[in-house]
Length: 110
Image (cartoon, rainbow, N blue to C red; front, top):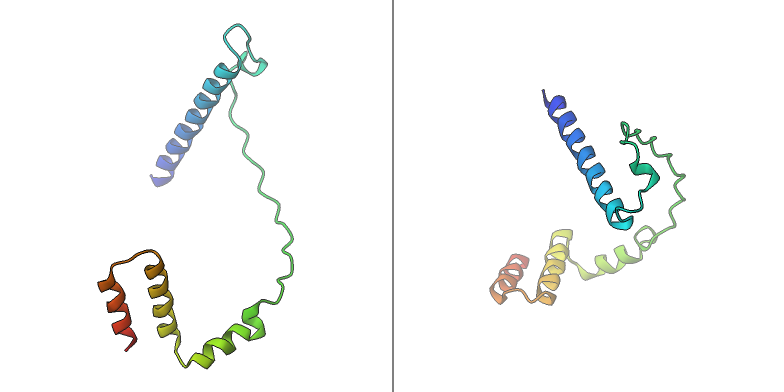
């Protein structure tokens, strides 16, 4: 039953797209000039071919893999949760968050 609803929704979407295309063509080509594609009603839309998988480029070593960032974060003496709370507090501060919220986040760091 769900696939029937999906099929109906898909058909409705296809008809809306065709209607929008017809309206767009009517605006581009006034009534005096008929576009060749408007002379016959559109047939069933052709399904799109599946996308070809693109070869993935080899990832370059990032700063995380080199240990640079990990070394800096380890030297702070804070664990992951505390660093996450500090980052969240910084973002909220830059966004102009309420001071009570910032104090509550700082309280969680204790």
